[in-house]
Image (tube, rainbow, N blue to C red; front, top):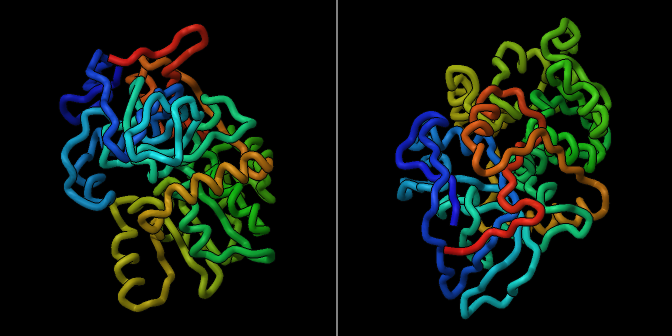
Length: 330
C-alpha cells in the first residue's frame, strides 16, 4: 500500500510517500481502506515536537512512522472477534494516537475505538471532521453553556474553532467569533452572533462582556483574554499559548480551585460515543463540515506546509482514493 511515512522527525521535507506492507487486523481490530484523511495542527506538532505530543497524548509510546488522525473510508476486513462492524461498512472517525495513522491507503484500529458508521448525507472527503470537534467539545461541556451565556472564541475559523462555534450555538449560547478578516463570512455562516477581525480595533474594544473565552489556536495573550472576561469568567485554551504562558495559570487554577483557566480533555474511552453523537448532529443538519483545501496523497508534504502557515479554515483534506481509482492492499 502507499503511505506517507516519516523516518525521522523534522520539517515537512522528511515525509516520503512510498509503498509499505499493509497492516493485518488483530482479533478485535478492523482494517480500514482509507478514502480521505487530513493534515492538522496535531500532525504538524507530532512531526516537529514528538516528545511533547507523546506526553500530551498520555505517555512515551513508540514512535509512529505514519501520522494522521481523521479518516473516512470503508471496512476492508475484520478480526475474528469483531461484532460491531463488517466488511463494506462506510465509517469515519479518528485513528488512535498509539497506532500508525490514517495518512495511508490502509490502517487498523480497535472496533471499540473512536469510529462510527458515516453520516448518510456526507461524501468521504466531507466526513474527515472529527478531530477538531473532539478537541473542542470538552471545553464546551466544561463551560456548561446554555441560553444567555456569552462566549468568545478566538481562532473560530480553524478545525477546532469552527467546531467550537457550532457546538456552542447548538447549546444556545451567544457566540462572538474572532477570526482573520477573510474568514468573517465563514464565521457568520456558521451561526456567529458577532464576527470580529482580530487585527482591528473592534477586537480591542469588545470589553469584559464574556462568561467564557476559548482560545482555539493558542495565540491569545493573557493581557487580552483577561480584559474580555466578566468577573468569575473562565478561560479555556487548546494550547499552552505564547511562550507557554498558560501553563502557570493552569497550574494555579488547579491548585486554588478557582477554575479560571482550564484545559479540559476528553475522558478516556468516550471517543466512539462522541463520534456517534457527532454523526447524529451532522445528519440533523446541526453540524456542518468546513473544508479548506484538498491535496492528493502524493502532495501531502505541501499540505503540511500549508497547515503550518496557520492560515487554514476548517480542515485540509488528503484524498487517498479518488474517482476511478481504488487503493489495493499490499
